[in-house]
Length: 205
Image (cartoon, rainbow, N blue to C red; front, side):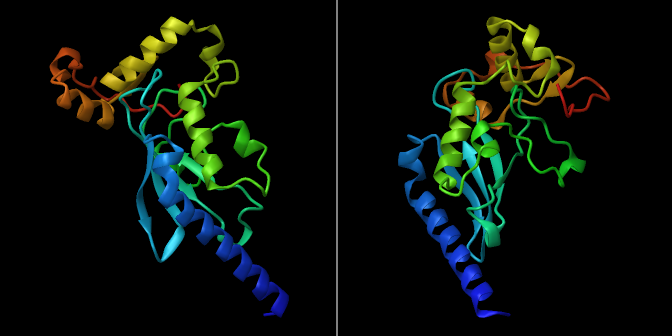
């Protein structure tokens, strides 16, 4: 392998390593306690999982996991591939099905679309948090969002967190919401009905 190529690979590997461990050490402060790296392998830091738990806004009380897949050789020239692996009702996050493993991303955020080499993993966390606080219903992966009122949207979000059918799609109670409800002894107040028979989670809402 030519020396220049080996040097390029070495530099790219160092960039990802530096960014990853910087994120690991600073993600709590960066996110104000709303995100953490919950799954990673020290032998391959190009793949890891971040859990986001908004402390306010329409998704408060929920927890959502995002799988990061970084092409180490081309980072930060190419943006990370980010998939939300927790079922969610969100205008800018599409719902994954088991056969969607080859999907490039199911997260629609301008920072990833307009990615520049000066961006890094810290920016990805900030962008994900922004999605939870500022969901964009006018530029949506869901066809119905342009016709939905703000109040109805907020009601749908709450229904999806508590568990139930929203716009024809069944959601199990969000695991973060269940944990928080148990802590506040509030779970029975929002017990959802059993899942309808033969109802599967929709890919698109």
